[in-house]
Image 1: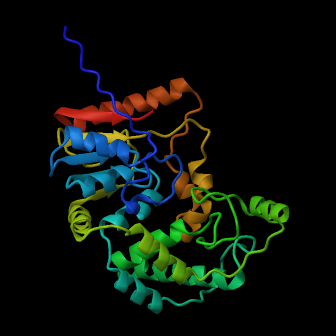
Image 2 (image 1 turned 180 degrees about the vertical axis):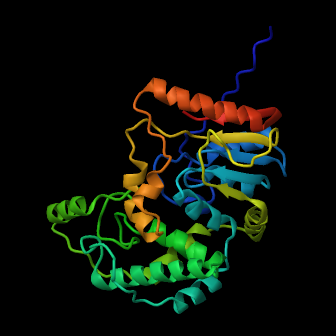
Image 3 (image 1 turned 30 degrees about the vertical axis):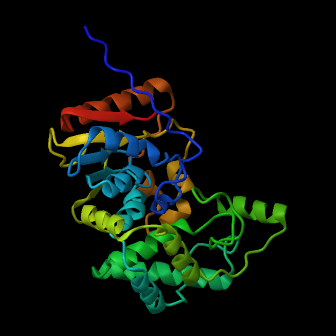
Length: 317
């Protein structure tokens, strides 16, 4: 029996931040773009389907699109598609600026939670205005790529530890502490929220995400976005993916129960009208290795069915 080849590559390097800036959306436990880029370049050709069953912030999907591959991404957390899909339908920055001018800077506080520990009052008014604009557009069926982009960027700017975020100093932007936790931070740091111009910060982050992007790269993203599929479901039962159709899967499965994916995203969920119980629905948090192995075994069986002959699964653990 011939032993399979051993392929070595150094993926966690000092240059891991040299990837396209459009990846720079924070999310819990995301890997660097160099990892999917390595497997995409080695095992696929333009036009092949690349899949990620635990898509998270969409690193595999974005990298596949930039390489001219077709994209299927799945995550049981509905926030994943809200963060990923807009970056494959990149709007013109002038259109983003014009849309922000149309969005009211004041929204109704009716039904809104107490967020005074995170935001200065005018900042909160602007966040509510953004949220209610997006709610109305989705309800009316008029939401478009510009709205989705603005919503994605605003979601990423809700909390963080610099003046580039909407909030007072808080945890890093890939999670949100509870209201009580933020009050403790404010007391410890002797700080109070100050006004942040949310529209200016959205436009600034938009420019950062598109930094260095050529028209060719933007065209590849949009072309892939036209056919990309962003699914929200259980990775053990991938919905409507044809057997033998996927050339490559690159993914990083969820951790054990040390990460509270729903709780960490409570504020992002509120902004996107996705309550915590909806985010938590279906998220697997195995308590031990045997439970985790059973779930991942079922995922691998599903991947076996949808992977084409000679296809590859890269499973980063």
